[in-house]
Figure 1: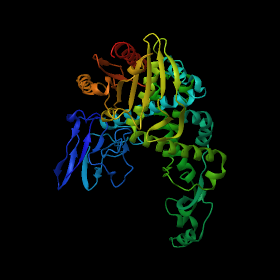
Figure 2: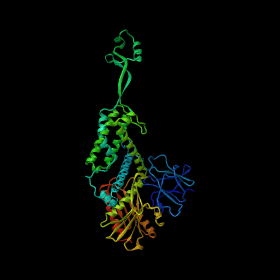
Figure 3: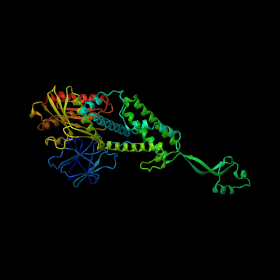
Figure 4: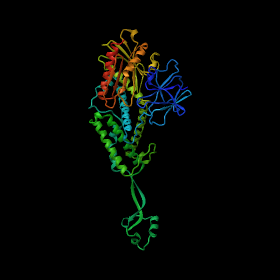
Length: 527
């Protein structure tokens, strides 16, 4: 009997309509995801055991806190595939289920501009993943003063204007270090002289070898002019310039890749295109485009990743700089592959920081305890921040409330585990020890299309009603903004469904709506 289910929401244990049942297809049980579903997927196995995806037991990421106290059930989040085919196979115990996920977007190609509507949508999605990464890296900068971490993060996220420079990035460093180098190599690239045999006018013949002499003596006539024929040409050794060397292939490939990275950087920082940093990057992109075009016209081919550097790439100062820069961009592209696979987890982390920024933005809010944070040098499946729980404890004196923020708890209250919310807010009135048991569930739901989902606030309200015994007083869903980029919120007495952007007004308004709901609707009145 097949025990594997595919969930479209993490709260599907409480809302059965959010599950995909298995069906028999082509002799093997399968699950076909709705074509209008543009969000992440979770795998649920009732009988426990290891979840194996395409033969790998570590492919999916377990949802922390869902299986506790020896529960046999398992819930794990699936990564987004880089390619739609082949269809993944999920195994739990002795049951195999084939997943037909035709609605998922593929990772956009690196070396070419998007052409089709699907490629354009995938490109926009990758830009969003990079923008979320930019926001997460603000933590690394703010950690320079750990005591002021959350205040500094709030300042960066809510007070930044269009005149402030865009984020430092790998392409910004390359623009500063390589602009002159690219110009010099474009004007005078290395080339080799190849000996070839061509029909050359007699007046321009410089060298004859054995092959040329053999050809010449076989021609009719007695004098050189007669043997040259009507065109007065003979076969001779000619030397021609050839630019298609390994070092130039690497240079052209770097220029092509850097042009794409430059384009992405400028699109992510569209609001700041007039700053000096953005203008330098834009000019660097034009240099790369010009160099790539010139080398293509000269017959220089593209280099494949993994080539062994030759003497020139190792010892020539200018080409060695380009070689190192190319390797950096290749490593950067691998990071983007992981960001693509785990966008939903990066979105969770970004929303957790947004909740903290919203809380510290409430007038009079004061952090009375904060867990140490570490920003990782390499991501762990879309996650960049290591922390303890609770993440922070915030005092709101005007409301007389103490708030505790917890994120990805390994051992939550057993009554809360069924809801699989990655973020929990526990709160109560100061001085009321027995009342410090109220909970708010927060579900950051990544979505490729962005925007609100119809009737989701009503759905969350029903789930909150089911969770009364677990002292769940409200539920919040945080989604990405749609292409229009506006933050929109729908709220009821016990639910908030809101879209949030990663910068500009869409971020500020989303933070403000979240802060208002947390302070006025929940903490001040629902106990």
